[in-house]
Length: 138
Image 1 (cartoon, rainbow, N blue to C red):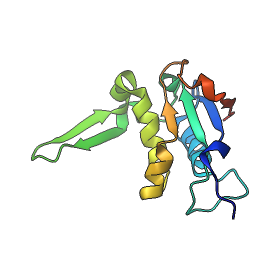
Image 2: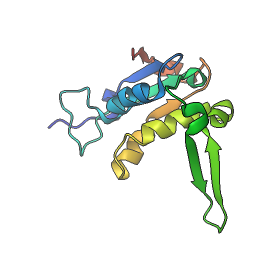
Image 3: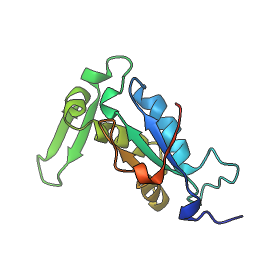
Image 4: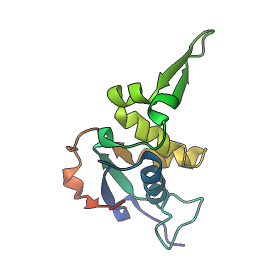
């Protein structure tokens, strides 16, 4: 099996304006893992880099804006923090998409490495113009 070098990786830009969170996260996770390539192997990092723009324009189905809750534990007694999706979208829309993609990647060392290839921005501008990213349709 040929080894995938970083110079062989492509850069894709994904516009999340009007996209449904879960459906967009599935496709992005597949590209990060490399499942869109014929040389895919689950134990090798052969995925590409993704730049996700307009994360503040994500859409949600059902009553998730008021009903979905994110939890964060500080490690101290009484340190469980809860944040509703609607509040998180106003403050950190990038984190909402990152957590959705993170949940769809493997839960080990390789999954953490694959997540570093995801770059999420709430607006339309990104600093990765020099990489000449290709537009990826969802």
